[in-house]
Length: 295
Image (cartoon, rainbow, N blue to C red; front, side, top):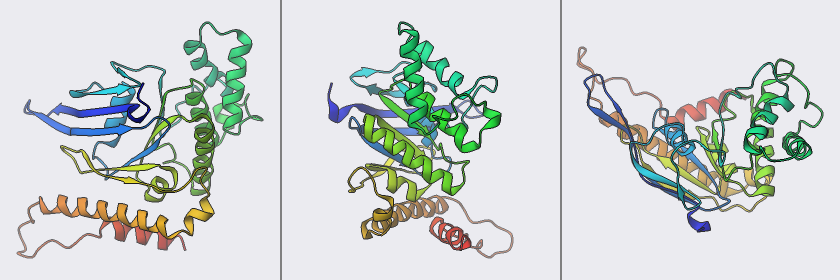
C-alpha cells in the first residue's frame, strides 16, 4: 500500500449518449491522487459533474473510461470499503436509528458476535451524538438527527473512504456547522480518507486539507488544486479570524468566477433588439448578496 496514493483516479471519463446517439463526455480526463487520511473537497458550478465523479468512486455509476484504484486495488463496483452519505439520509422509516445502522453492520460483519455488532452500532451512534436517541424512529427525529443516523450508518462499516455528497445541503446553518464538527471529530479520531462534494466555499475551506476545483462541463476535469494550511483539529473561531482563511476563500471565488465567465463567452448573444443581453450577477456577487441578506 502506498499511503500517498491511497486513492488514485486516472483519466476518468463519464459519457452519456445524446438524443442523436453520439456520446457526450460529462467528465473527461479527471485525474486526482488522494493521500490516506486526507480530507479533500470537490467544488464547482452546478452540473459540472462533481456528484458523477463521487458515484463512480462509490461504484454506483459505471465508468466510461479511465480507472479508480483504492488501496492498491482497482474498483469494479460498490463495496463496503467506500461508504456514502447523501444529501437525503434515506432511512428506512419502519426501523429505529439503531435498526437502520444495524442493517448495514449485519451485512458487513456476518461473522461478528451479536455483542460485537451491538458495540459497533452503539459506538457509531454515540460518535454522532445520538446516544440518547438510538431507539427513535425517523419520524420522531429532526432533519439534522436523521442525517446523523446516515453518518453513523456510514462510519459503522469502517470504510477506507468516506464519500459525502452535499450531506448538509438541506440543513439550517446552525445544524450544518454542528454536523461539520461532528464529522471532523470522527475523522480526526479514525483517520478515514474523505471526499466531500459541496457548493459552499466556506465549508470547503474549513473542512479540507485540499480543495479540488472542477471546470465546467461538459468535458469537466480538475482545474486547480489548493492546499489548506491549517492544523487539525480545526478551530472554527481561530480560522474565521485568520487572514489565510479569507485568502483561500478569495481564490476559490475567483476560480468559480473565471469558470462562469468562460461559460458565458461560449454562448452567442441573443438577437432581436440589437442590444447585448443584460449582464447577470457573477457567482461572487450572488454570494455577497446572499450573505448581506442575512444581516
